[in-house]
Image 1 (spheres, helix red, strand yellow):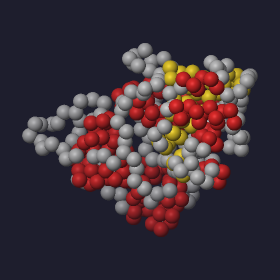
Image 2 (cartoon, rainbow, N blue to C red):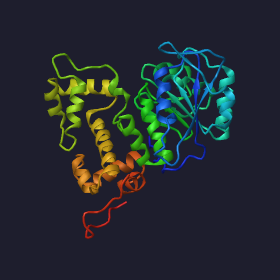
Image 3 (cartoon, rainbow, N blue to C red):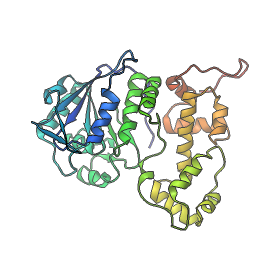
Image 4 (cartoon, one colour):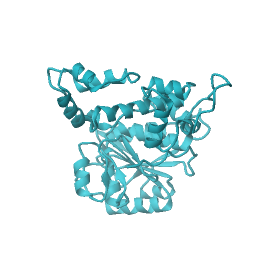
Length: 340
């Protein structure tokens, strides 16, 4: 399936972000919403106006024995530009009809709706995700697909951006989705600055399938260790025979277990990892496309361009124009311009 092109950075028209609070609140996911959108950032000229909306009367209990006092009720959604559903109290817990109606009205008015982890069950219950892609924690993916068959569930990704409807996978993937939205609204430099302050990577490679427990045989190296070994050698050819030797198993067994654990073949996984590394270098270095292709194991810039267009719908040059967070200076004026 062809992926949509990367949206260019643009300042959000409505910077009011409202996070839902409910009895049984997922504390970690709610904390991510506060950390990413609610902390004051006086070093930035423009930032979000963060509020908390109670979907029901209190007291609202949160995981860990906490109590939450919200800024207001569902009326707070009337002025929201972005609404966050930070998890939900259970995949089997039906959302209140008043909440579903308020979310639908907010979306129709132009608000973006985000879900973290199990919060996708709330968005799906509105019907807005019908015919659209969405994700959630891998433990809930089958339940989501069974309960909402019209939603196109993608269980192996960290987040899905459908424009005004955005969903993230398990818990910490909410950080990835938040940084993605900040990048959309304010550009890569601000997103990278927020990531540094939170001490998290601006980009995380791969999907959540790598976190599903499915180790290689006990006599071999664990899959996690093998993946890290491969990541450190993206610039080199990594034939299947070498990987199987490293894992101390047969090529056939490695293929079967690698795909069971990651949802991809070793070749597909390497393509995605190399693409992620290339994106990082395009954003944060002055290396030429040829140099980046060499460091990421593509061998030649034309191969890098091919994979970039196929995966992201843009060339490396256009991607760098949109997302580089420092001026790009070519090593010499005599170098030919990069092909788009």
